[in-house]
Length: 212
Image (cartoon, rainbow, N blue to C red; front, side, top):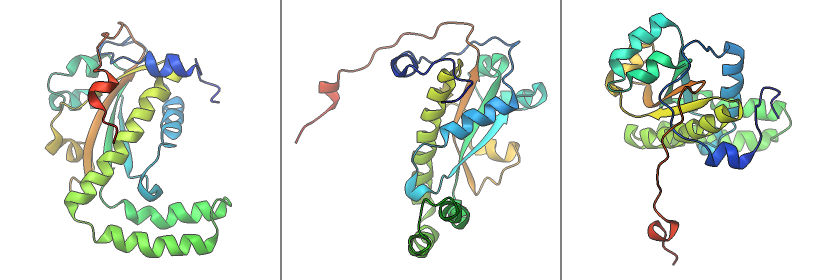
């Protein structure tokens, strides 16, 4: 358990989560704690463990001003949050496959022969996937890490708001990423809540579930 957790209560973390749009603008999360939360979030699963998520933490006033025109009607979060976390999917994530699998071998989590067998099939497979299919894969994986990051943030005493309304075509290039390689998935605002998030409703499980 992280020594910066405020709570480790599963019910409170999970079922108490609400989207918060107004934060204490005087509170800044340290770089160290931000990296800690991202590290904890990346224990989320991903396809063949290629971890195609990439993060840009926008926290300075200058960079927030740069981001503001891209977030459409979500400017309150941008103005008051400790940071806006831009989450991208890497369409060429297989380029890190050897590094990931070598690390697994070095840490005793995978035998070398399994690494070699996996890499010999995974890399050619990913190299031959269409851009559309890769887009689907990385967006699913990056959404998993985003959800985990929202829950990790609550354990650290912060609130978040997942944002899908932004200028997708312009975001990567505006923050120094190759727009052909990195596809924007979501923006998370994060900070100390200054308001209580709205209580919302959910459809009942029996309405949205079929048993066959």
